Amino acid sequence: MRVNGALLSQHSGRPVVILGTVQQVDPSGMMVSLKASDDQVIQVKLQQPLQENLEGVMEVHGMSQGRQVLCQSYVTFPQESYANFDMGSYDEAVKLIHSVSGNPWKSD
Amino acid sequence: MWNSNGDGYGGGFGGQSEGGFMTGDSQFDSPASKEQARGRKVQNLVPMTLRSIQECGDEGLQVTGTEVHMAVVVGLIRAVDVTSTKVTYTLDDTTAVMDVVQWIESDNGPEDGGRSNLMEMTYCRAAGTMRTHQGKRHLMAFQITPVTDLNVVTNHVLSVIHAGLKLQQIQTLQQSSGIGGPATSSTMPNSLVGAGGLGGSMGLGGGSGYSGGGGGMQGLSSQQNMVYQVIHQCPDEAGVSRNAIHGNLTGKISQKQIDEVLDFLSSEGHIYTTIDDDHFKSTDG
Image: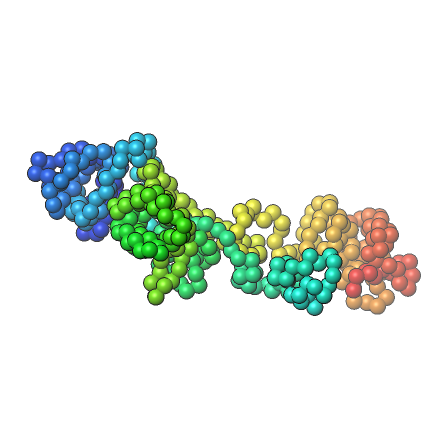
Protein backbone atom coordinates (compact mmCIF):
# COMPACT_ATOMS: atom_id res chain seq x y z
CA MET A 1 0.00 0.00 0.00
CA ARG A 2 1.33 3.41 -0.93
CA VAL A 3 2.19 5.77 1.89
CA ASN A 4 3.76 9.14 2.45
CA GLY A 5 5.92 10.25 5.35
CA ALA A 6 3.08 10.77 7.78
CA LEU A 7 1.32 7.53 6.92
CA LEU A 8 4.48 5.45 7.12
CA SER A 9 4.54 5.39 10.90
CA GLN A 10 0.84 4.53 11.01
CA HIS A 11 1.46 1.33 9.10
CA SER A 12 4.31 0.02 11.15
CA GLY A 13 4.93 -3.67 10.59
CA ARG A 14 3.09 -3.73 7.26
CA PRO A 15 4.38 -3.81 3.71
CA VAL A 16 4.44 -0.34 2.21
CA VAL A 17 5.52 1.49 -0.90
CA ILE A 18 6.96 4.93 -0.48
CA LEU A 19 8.08 7.27 -3.20
CA GLY A 20 10.32 10.26 -2.69
CA THR A 21 13.47 12.14 -3.59
CA VAL A 22 16.85 11.04 -2.34
CA GLN A 23 18.27 13.52 0.14
CA GLN A 24 21.34 11.83 1.39
CA VAL A 25 23.06 8.52 1.20
CA ASP A 26 24.85 7.32 4.29
CA PRO A 27 28.56 6.67 3.69
CA SER A 28 28.06 3.05 4.69
CA GLY A 29 25.65 2.65 1.85
CA MET A 30 23.08 1.03 4.12
CA MET A 31 20.90 4.03 4.89
CA VAL A 32 19.23 6.55 2.65
CA SER A 33 17.37 9.67 3.65
CA LEU A 34 14.31 10.05 1.52
CA LYS A 35 12.07 13.07 1.31
CA ALA A 36 8.58 11.69 0.92
CA SER A 37 5.75 13.17 -1.14
CA ASP A 38 4.54 15.15 1.86
CA ASP A 39 8.03 16.63 2.34
CA GLN A 40 8.71 14.57 5.42
CA VAL A 41 12.09 12.92 5.59
CA ILE A 42 12.17 9.26 6.39
CA GLN A 43 14.99 6.78 6.67
CA VAL A 44 15.38 3.83 4.37
CA LYS A 45 17.31 0.91 5.73
CA LEU A 46 18.85 -1.22 3.05
CA GLN A 47 19.61 -4.90 3.27
CA GLN A 48 22.63 -4.69 1.06
CA PRO A 49 24.98 -1.78 0.64
CA LEU A 50 24.17 0.41 -2.28
CA GLN A 51 26.04 -0.38 -5.43
CA GLU A 52 25.02 2.66 -7.39
CA ASN A 53 24.99 6.34 -6.74
CA LEU A 54 21.38 7.09 -6.01
CA GLU A 55 19.82 10.37 -6.79
CA GLY A 56 16.52 11.78 -7.90
CA VAL A 57 13.25 10.01 -7.35
CA MET A 58 13.08 6.50 -6.05
CA GLU A 59 10.34 4.20 -4.88
CA VAL A 60 11.01 1.91 -1.97
CA HIS A 61 9.08 -1.31 -1.37
CA GLY A 62 9.51 -2.74 2.08
CA MET A 63 8.32 -3.11 5.66
CA SER A 64 7.39 -0.08 7.65
CA GLN A 65 9.25 0.34 10.90
CA GLY A 66 7.83 3.54 12.30
CA ARG A 67 9.78 6.40 10.78
CA GLN A 68 11.96 3.98 8.93
CA VAL A 69 11.36 1.52 6.18
CA LEU A 70 13.22 -1.73 5.77
CA CYS A 71 13.81 -1.90 2.09
CA GLN A 72 13.12 -5.12 0.23
CA SER A 73 13.37 -3.67 -3.23
CA TYR A 74 13.56 -0.30 -4.80
CA VAL A 75 12.93 1.29 -8.17
CA THR A 76 14.78 4.23 -9.58
CA PHE A 77 13.53 6.36 -12.36
CA PRO A 78 15.28 8.08 -15.22
CA GLN A 79 15.38 11.82 -15.03
CA GLU A 80 12.97 12.25 -17.96
CA SER A 81 10.21 10.41 -16.17
CA TYR A 82 10.20 12.62 -13.14
CA ALA A 83 11.15 15.93 -14.71
CA ASN A 84 7.53 17.03 -14.78
CA PHE A 85 6.37 14.84 -11.98
CA ASP A 86 3.81 16.50 -9.80
CA MET A 87 4.72 15.39 -6.31
CA GLY A 88 1.85 17.32 -4.81
CA SER A 89 -0.72 15.44 -6.88
CA TYR A 90 0.95 12.16 -6.01
CA ASP A 91 0.70 13.02 -2.34
CA GLU A 92 -2.98 13.85 -2.77
CA ALA A 93 -3.52 10.53 -4.49
CA VAL A 94 -1.82 8.70 -1.62
CA LYS A 95 -4.01 10.49 0.87
CA LEU A 96 -7.09 9.56 -1.13
CA ILE A 97 -6.08 5.90 -1.15
CA HIS A 98 -6.27 5.98 2.61
CA SER A 99 -9.34 8.13 3.00
CA VAL A 100 -11.81 6.98 0.34
CA SER A 101 -13.79 4.14 1.85
CA GLY A 102 -14.06 0.94 -0.09
CA ASN A 103 -11.58 1.82 -2.78
CA PRO A 104 -9.66 -1.04 -4.39
CA TRP A 105 -6.20 0.16 -3.34
CA LYS A 106 -6.78 -0.39 0.31
CA SER A 107 -6.40 -3.95 1.55
CA ASP A 108 -8.32 -3.58 4.79
CA MET B 1 -40.79 -16.50 -38.17
CA TRP B 2 -37.62 -14.47 -38.12
CA ASN B 3 -35.45 -17.25 -39.28
CA SER B 4 -31.77 -16.95 -39.72
CA ASN B 5 -31.75 -17.81 -43.42
CA GLY B 6 -32.52 -14.60 -45.12
CA ASP B 7 -32.65 -16.04 -48.61
CA GLY B 8 -36.25 -17.03 -48.41
CA TYR B 9 -37.31 -13.46 -47.90
CA GLY B 10 -36.03 -11.67 -50.94
CA GLY B 11 -35.28 -8.02 -51.09
CA GLY B 12 -35.49 -5.55 -48.33
CA PHE B 13 -34.11 -7.75 -45.63
CA GLY B 14 -30.46 -7.36 -46.39
CA GLY B 15 -29.91 -11.09 -46.26
CA GLN B 16 -27.97 -10.86 -43.01
CA SER B 17 -28.20 -13.92 -40.92
CA GLU B 18 -26.90 -13.42 -37.41
CA GLY B 19 -26.69 -9.68 -37.54
CA GLY B 20 -30.19 -9.14 -38.75
CA PHE B 21 -31.47 -11.70 -36.36
CA MET B 22 -30.02 -9.88 -33.42
CA THR B 23 -31.61 -6.56 -34.23
CA GLY B 24 -34.86 -8.24 -35.11
CA ASP B 25 -34.59 -9.75 -31.71
CA SER B 26 -35.94 -6.65 -30.10
CA GLN B 27 -39.42 -8.02 -30.04
CA PHE B 28 -38.20 -10.86 -27.88
CA ASP B 29 -36.43 -8.54 -25.52
CA SER B 30 -36.65 -9.93 -22.07
CA PRO B 31 -36.88 -7.46 -19.22
CA ALA B 32 -33.87 -9.03 -17.53
CA SER B 33 -30.96 -6.71 -18.03
CA LYS B 34 -28.44 -9.53 -17.77
CA GLU B 35 -29.71 -11.13 -20.94
CA GLN B 36 -29.67 -7.83 -22.68
CA ALA B 37 -26.05 -7.40 -21.74
CA ARG B 38 -25.18 -10.82 -23.10
CA GLY B 39 -26.88 -10.20 -26.37
CA ARG B 40 -25.23 -6.80 -26.71
CA LYS B 41 -21.71 -7.39 -25.42
CA VAL B 42 -20.60 -4.85 -22.87
CA GLN B 43 -17.65 -2.94 -24.26
CA ASN B 44 -15.80 -0.82 -21.82
CA LEU B 45 -12.29 -0.20 -20.57
CA VAL B 46 -11.97 0.37 -16.87
CA PRO B 47 -8.86 1.14 -14.82
CA MET B 48 -8.54 -1.52 -12.17
CA THR B 49 -6.20 -2.87 -9.55
CA LEU B 50 -4.75 -6.33 -9.91
CA ARG B 51 -6.40 -7.32 -6.68
CA SER B 52 -9.88 -6.45 -7.95
CA ILE B 53 -9.18 -8.54 -11.03
CA GLN B 54 -8.11 -11.48 -8.93
CA GLU B 55 -11.00 -11.19 -6.57
CA CYS B 56 -13.67 -11.17 -9.24
CA GLY B 57 -15.97 -14.13 -9.13
CA ASP B 58 -16.48 -16.49 -12.00
CA GLU B 59 -18.89 -14.11 -13.64
CA GLY B 60 -16.10 -12.28 -15.31
CA LEU B 61 -14.59 -8.91 -14.57
CA GLN B 62 -16.74 -6.70 -12.44
CA VAL B 63 -16.44 -3.43 -10.60
CA THR B 64 -19.05 -3.01 -7.89
CA GLY B 65 -21.36 -5.21 -9.85
CA THR B 66 -20.93 -3.56 -13.24
CA GLU B 67 -19.61 -5.83 -15.96
CA VAL B 68 -16.21 -4.90 -17.25
CA HIS B 69 -14.92 -5.99 -20.62
CA MET B 70 -11.34 -4.76 -20.52
CA ALA B 71 -9.11 -3.49 -17.77
CA VAL B 72 -6.09 -1.24 -17.72
CA VAL B 73 -3.53 -1.61 -14.98
CA VAL B 74 -0.27 0.10 -14.12
CA GLY B 75 2.37 -1.84 -12.27
CA LEU B 76 5.97 -2.73 -11.74
CA ILE B 77 7.42 -5.52 -13.83
CA ARG B 78 8.94 -8.00 -11.45
CA ALA B 79 9.81 -10.68 -13.97
CA VAL B 80 9.88 -11.19 -17.69
CA ASP B 81 9.58 -14.60 -19.28
CA VAL B 82 9.97 -14.87 -23.00
CA THR B 83 8.94 -17.92 -25.00
CA SER B 84 8.60 -18.31 -28.72
CA THR B 85 4.88 -17.68 -28.65
CA LYS B 86 4.42 -15.18 -25.89
CA VAL B 87 5.96 -12.91 -23.32
CA THR B 88 4.81 -13.11 -19.73
CA TYR B 89 5.35 -10.12 -17.49
CA THR B 90 4.80 -10.51 -13.80
CA LEU B 91 3.22 -7.28 -12.73
CA ASP B 92 3.04 -5.87 -9.22
CA ASP B 93 0.79 -2.87 -8.60
CA THR B 94 1.08 -2.78 -4.76
CA THR B 95 -2.29 -4.54 -4.35
CA ALA B 96 -1.45 -7.86 -5.96
CA VAL B 97 0.91 -9.59 -8.31
CA MET B 98 -0.38 -11.05 -11.57
CA ASP B 99 0.93 -12.32 -14.84
CA VAL B 100 0.28 -10.32 -17.93
CA VAL B 101 0.60 -12.25 -21.15
CA GLN B 102 1.29 -10.81 -24.53
CA TRP B 103 1.09 -13.12 -27.50
CA ILE B 104 3.72 -12.62 -30.11
CA GLU B 105 2.59 -12.53 -33.70
CA SER B 106 4.88 -14.61 -35.85
CA ASP B 107 5.75 -11.82 -38.26
CA ASN B 108 6.88 -9.44 -35.59
CA GLY B 109 10.52 -10.45 -35.61
CA PRO B 110 12.22 -7.07 -35.90
CA GLU B 111 9.69 -5.53 -33.51
CA ASP B 112 11.19 -7.39 -30.61
CA GLY B 113 13.57 -4.52 -30.08
CA GLY B 114 10.65 -2.33 -29.12
CA ARG B 115 9.63 -4.72 -26.41
CA SER B 116 12.97 -4.83 -24.71
CA ASN B 117 12.44 -1.58 -22.89
CA LEU B 118 9.93 -3.42 -20.80
CA MET B 119 12.49 -4.59 -18.34
CA GLU B 120 12.29 -5.80 -14.83
CA MET B 121 11.86 -3.16 -12.17
CA THR B 122 10.29 -0.68 -14.53
CA TYR B 123 6.73 0.53 -14.54
CA CYS B 124 4.44 -0.28 -17.40
CA ARG B 125 0.81 0.09 -18.32
CA ALA B 126 -1.10 -2.88 -19.67
CA ALA B 127 -4.60 -3.05 -21.08
CA GLY B 128 -6.45 -6.23 -21.89
CA THR B 129 -8.96 -8.85 -20.85
CA MET B 130 -8.89 -11.37 -18.06
CA ARG B 131 -8.25 -14.96 -18.96
CA THR B 132 -8.11 -18.01 -16.75
CA HIS B 133 -5.62 -20.67 -17.66
CA GLN B 134 -5.06 -23.82 -15.66
CA GLY B 135 -6.83 -22.30 -12.71
CA LYS B 136 -4.68 -19.19 -12.64
CA ARG B 137 -5.89 -15.84 -13.76
CA HIS B 138 -3.92 -13.59 -15.98
CA LEU B 139 -4.41 -10.54 -18.08
CA MET B 140 -4.22 -11.07 -21.80
CA ALA B 141 -2.89 -7.72 -22.85
CA PHE B 142 -3.46 -6.22 -26.23
CA GLN B 143 -1.17 -3.37 -25.35
CA ILE B 144 1.70 -2.97 -22.92
CA THR B 145 3.70 0.22 -22.89
CA PRO B 146 6.40 1.44 -20.57
CA VAL B 147 5.58 4.32 -18.28
CA THR B 148 7.68 7.24 -19.33
CA ASP B 149 6.21 9.82 -17.03
CA LEU B 150 5.63 9.14 -13.37
CA ASN B 151 2.48 11.21 -13.47
CA VAL B 152 0.89 8.24 -15.25
CA VAL B 153 1.19 6.32 -12.00
CA THR B 154 -0.55 9.06 -10.04
CA ASN B 155 -3.18 9.29 -12.74
CA HIS B 156 -3.90 5.59 -12.64
CA VAL B 157 -4.29 5.58 -8.86
CA LEU B 158 -6.86 8.33 -9.16
CA SER B 159 -8.60 6.81 -12.20
CA VAL B 160 -9.20 3.56 -10.40
CA ILE B 161 -10.77 5.28 -7.42
CA HIS B 162 -12.78 7.49 -9.72
CA ALA B 163 -14.04 4.63 -11.88
CA GLY B 164 -15.21 2.69 -8.85
CA LEU B 165 -17.14 5.60 -7.45
CA LYS B 166 -18.53 6.66 -10.83
CA LEU B 167 -19.83 3.18 -11.62
CA GLN B 168 -21.43 3.05 -8.21
CA GLN B 169 -23.11 6.36 -8.89
CA ILE B 170 -24.41 5.21 -12.26
CA GLN B 171 -25.81 2.11 -10.65
CA THR B 172 -27.67 3.94 -7.93
CA LEU B 173 -29.04 6.42 -10.44
CA GLN B 174 -30.30 3.65 -12.65
CA GLN B 175 -31.89 1.84 -9.79
CA SER B 176 -33.66 4.88 -8.48
CA SER B 177 -35.11 5.80 -11.84
CA GLY B 178 -36.30 2.27 -12.40
CA ILE B 179 -34.19 1.37 -15.43
CA GLY B 180 -32.33 -1.88 -15.21
CA GLY B 181 -30.11 -1.51 -18.24
CA PRO B 182 -26.35 -2.10 -18.41
CA ALA B 183 -24.29 0.84 -17.32
CA THR B 184 -22.62 1.87 -20.51
CA SER B 185 -23.44 5.43 -21.42
CA SER B 186 -23.13 8.36 -19.12
CA THR B 187 -26.35 9.15 -17.38
CA MET B 188 -28.21 12.32 -16.84
CA PRO B 189 -30.35 12.10 -13.75
CA ASN B 190 -33.68 11.12 -15.08
CA SER B 191 -35.84 14.20 -15.21
CA LEU B 192 -39.12 12.39 -15.68
CA VAL B 193 -41.24 11.96 -12.66
CA GLY B 194 -40.74 8.36 -11.71
CA ALA B 195 -43.28 5.62 -11.32
CA GLY B 196 -46.44 7.61 -10.75
CA GLY B 197 -48.40 6.76 -7.72
CA LEU B 198 -50.22 9.99 -8.26
CA GLY B 199 -53.37 8.00 -8.82
CA GLY B 200 -55.86 10.78 -9.27
CA SER B 201 -54.66 12.80 -6.35
CA MET B 202 -56.52 16.03 -6.14
CA GLY B 203 -54.13 17.87 -3.98
CA LEU B 204 -52.90 20.16 -6.67
CA GLY B 205 -53.83 23.76 -6.36
CA GLY B 206 -54.90 25.34 -9.62
CA GLY B 207 -51.95 24.26 -11.70
CA SER B 208 -52.66 24.20 -15.38
CA GLY B 209 -51.36 21.71 -17.86
CA TYR B 210 -50.95 19.03 -15.30
CA SER B 211 -49.68 15.98 -17.06
CA GLY B 212 -49.03 13.01 -14.86
CA GLY B 213 -49.31 9.32 -14.50
CA GLY B 214 -51.73 7.60 -12.25
CA GLY B 215 -55.39 8.26 -12.51
CA GLY B 216 -55.33 11.75 -13.93
CA MET B 217 -55.91 12.50 -17.56
CA GLN B 218 -53.35 14.25 -19.63
CA GLY B 219 -53.81 17.90 -20.40
CA LEU B 220 -56.56 18.67 -17.95
CA SER B 221 -56.38 21.51 -15.53
CA SER B 222 -56.74 20.60 -11.90
CA GLN B 223 -60.33 21.80 -11.83
CA GLN B 224 -61.26 19.83 -14.90
CA ASN B 225 -59.52 16.88 -13.42
CA MET B 226 -61.48 17.12 -10.20
CA VAL B 227 -64.79 17.22 -12.03
CA TYR B 228 -63.71 14.39 -14.22
CA GLN B 229 -62.71 12.29 -11.22
CA VAL B 230 -66.09 12.76 -9.60
CA ILE B 231 -67.80 11.57 -12.73
CA HIS B 232 -65.35 8.79 -13.33
CA GLN B 233 -65.70 7.36 -9.87
CA CYS B 234 -69.47 7.21 -9.91
CA PRO B 235 -70.53 3.58 -10.15
CA ASP B 236 -74.07 4.46 -11.10
CA GLU B 237 -75.34 3.25 -14.49
CA ALA B 238 -77.16 6.49 -15.01
CA GLY B 239 -74.12 8.50 -14.21
CA VAL B 240 -73.81 11.34 -11.76
CA SER B 241 -76.19 14.25 -11.86
CA ARG B 242 -75.01 17.78 -12.36
CA ASN B 243 -76.32 18.73 -8.92
CA ALA B 244 -74.43 15.92 -7.33
CA ILE B 245 -71.25 17.18 -8.89
CA HIS B 246 -72.00 20.63 -7.66
CA GLY B 247 -72.61 19.31 -4.20
CA ASN B 248 -69.47 17.28 -4.23
CA LEU B 249 -67.28 20.18 -5.18
CA THR B 250 -68.87 23.07 -3.31
CA GLY B 251 -66.26 25.30 -1.92
CA LYS B 252 -63.68 24.02 -4.34
CA ILE B 253 -65.15 25.00 -7.66
CA SER B 254 -68.07 27.33 -8.26
CA GLN B 255 -71.20 25.97 -9.94
CA LYS B 256 -70.70 28.12 -12.98
CA GLN B 257 -67.17 26.83 -13.39
CA ILE B 258 -68.31 23.26 -12.97
CA ASP B 259 -70.79 23.78 -15.75
CA GLU B 260 -68.09 25.19 -17.94
CA VAL B 261 -65.87 22.27 -17.18
CA LEU B 262 -68.65 19.83 -17.95
CA ASP B 263 -69.16 21.48 -21.30
CA PHE B 264 -65.50 21.30 -22.00
CA LEU B 265 -65.18 17.68 -20.99
CA SER B 266 -68.12 16.57 -23.04
CA SER B 267 -66.94 18.44 -26.09
CA GLU B 268 -63.57 16.81 -25.67
CA GLY B 269 -65.29 13.53 -25.42
CA HIS B 270 -64.22 12.60 -21.91
CA ILE B 271 -67.78 12.46 -20.62
CA TYR B 272 -71.21 11.95 -22.14
CA THR B 273 -74.75 12.57 -21.05
CA THR B 274 -77.00 9.69 -20.10
CA ILE B 275 -80.64 9.84 -19.10
CA ASP B 276 -80.80 13.57 -19.61
CA ASP B 277 -78.57 16.55 -20.14
CA ASP B 278 -77.79 16.69 -16.48
CA HIS B 279 -76.34 13.26 -15.96
CA PHE B 280 -72.83 12.44 -16.94
CA LYS B 281 -70.66 9.43 -17.24
CA SER B 282 -67.04 9.26 -18.24
CA THR B 283 -66.08 7.65 -21.51
CA ASP B 284 -63.12 5.76 -20.11
CA GLY B 285 -64.23 2.56 -18.46
